[in-house]
Length: 310
Image (cartoon, rainbow, N blue to C red; front, side, top):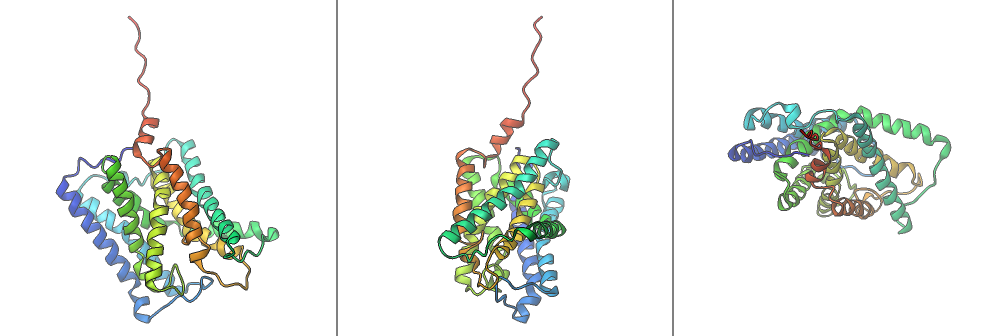
């Protein structure tokens, strides 16, 4: 899968990185400023977000895409936005469908593994599976995820469409390690305003929530990148991100004892059980070469046509 940025002048590429990060971060802080000014704090993992919180979160999630589009059009001038940011439907169709299914099944499996690990460790208050209403709950959770999907394009056009390819360059080992580490860290620290308000880790101080988010994002980013590399499109990465941020969170609440307190740090994809499950999967991807763009380039280049003997 080609991620080369050689055709972009080095000065434009460097300037573009700073502009992208500046716009994405300023956009996040600006969108969250009404909540920060009001002193909002999320008190519980079961707490529903209100109308103002939803509006602020939605605006913030669009900032990375806006930053990426501005850089591509006015700083790098590197071509069409859709092609440059991989905003296209994966082809061929069979691979597209399989990759999109993986974007749902893999996060579902990792969340299930995290809940099992947490239950065995005595941290997750498993309340059983309510089979009678399970189908209705799953349908509602997936529908909610699909409704919010445009907002996750707002994030992944920035992280997977723009930032990771710029840092990965031509995919040599050193560039890839740097790309995974920096993109994951930038992705995590971009969430700083929400972390300060207890968004991902209610009740936890910033010196716990910020390192926790760093670990979570650095581990989950290769999963999203794998989906992007496998398909040549950001679409499956968007689906995977949407599942992790919505359905996965709902799973923690759905299968827990309704009276028990929930601590994401000990029972979710954003906590240590999720780190164990995701870390094992990322290790598998790394050891099998699936986190290298060259792995997919070799599989998609057609064989040369046979020459006829004269």
